[in-house]
Length: 157
Ligand code: FES
Image (cartoon, rainbow, N blue to C red; front, side, top):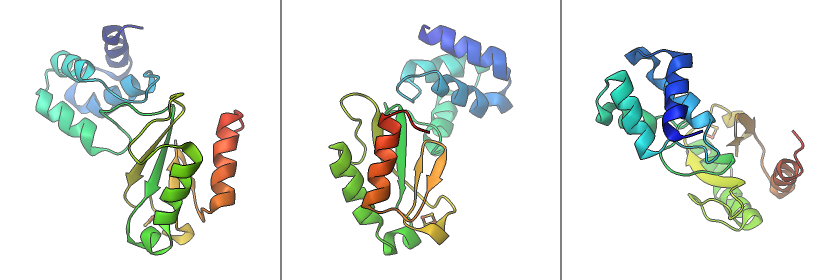
């Protein structure tokens, strides 16, 4: 699917009014193998919905669900807000980095995983926590982290 097709189809499904902007952005991103919205797509959305590019970009870069930079097929967002930090989120970062062989903000060579920070995801009671795609995982330790990565690699839900 070309970039324009992706944008046009998203607008066709979500609607072409300004209030549909987030929905359009989410649909465009969903169809991207690399889990992000390109600059060209932001421009196309801006033109098609007649919304200033600065606003489209502002929305796309504000929400942690959306991204304007390349990500992995599986996005791992590690919470670095206070309660998780106190309960060892720094160790969680180190464990994910060493298990995947990448640093925060990077994508694995096979495009399968990317690592990023997020602020509180509302699961402070099971800190340290992270969001793996749509799922929240808490009480993270090395065993759980290895299990999460292996399950994704093996295609286990
Ligand atoms: S501070 Fe990490 S989930 Fe709330």
